[in-house]
Image (tube, rainbow, N blue to C red; front, side):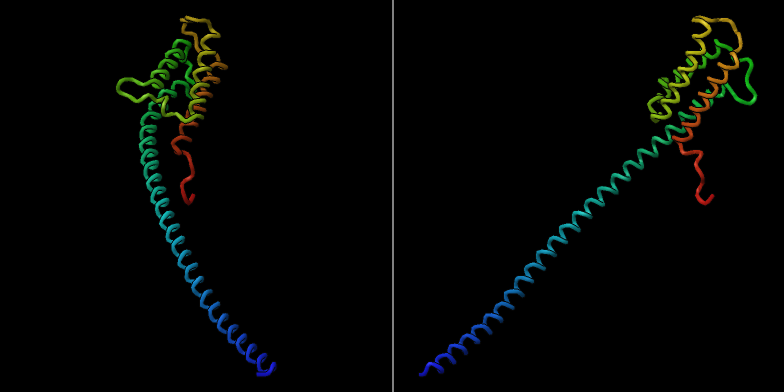
Length: 192
């Protein structure tokens, strides 16, 4: 065999080998692609299962907190109604000229009884939000300041000064405003 023939045979074998390698390469790529697709489907299914579990847990949490919120709202309505009625002691229109310092002390004691509760009533203080609690404290502080300015044990039935009346009345009004915020009772109705 001549060198040219030999080179021709080698070239033909090389071409055949290249063709075989190309075919096997395509097959190998196809096998790898199938393995990759299978792994992706498994990961996707795993993620779907995890998302479904998280969604179910989220729904359970919403249901739980919704029930707690509904119960808390019901308790607040009952308790806040009693507190609201107590704060009528100092109306703005018309002002009650009969309110004196001893009655202001009684008003404070009634608020304290509501706050700590009785054996028949839930302590109202534990139902207050932070803002409502701050308003309650401001009211009790203003009452204490008004009464102490007149002297401890001031037993005369002297009407409140206009300044004391307005200061305590404004604090009671601020407390009522916070109660309505807690209950969402003064918000706009949908569509209005």
